[in-house]
Length: 123
Image (cartoon, rainbow, N blue to C red):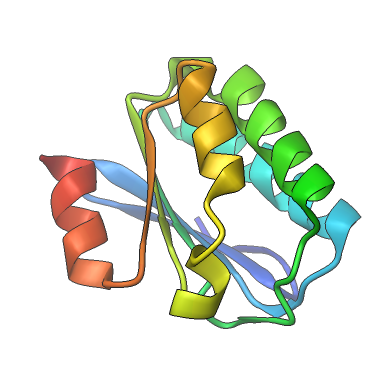
């Protein structure tokens, strides 16, 4: 499974799907990335999703955007067992979106350490 766009790659790994988002953050493409990542998991028959936004530049969504992203992920991700997000400390410091998704039933955690994220995802 290869790239689906210039700034997005989906890679099927053993037991999980890795979704990588590069480029510069913008609200609509990021929501499309979330939707596409969860759909790719379903298409591949896997229920573990590893999201890598560590190289996504200017990731500064507003609180409202984070709320909407968390709501969207929780609605679409009902079939997922776990979703791990890996990013930089600046990207991950505000975890409002993951809190919103978790409160709506999605098992999601955000990490700044890739190995720790993968251990949690597969644990």
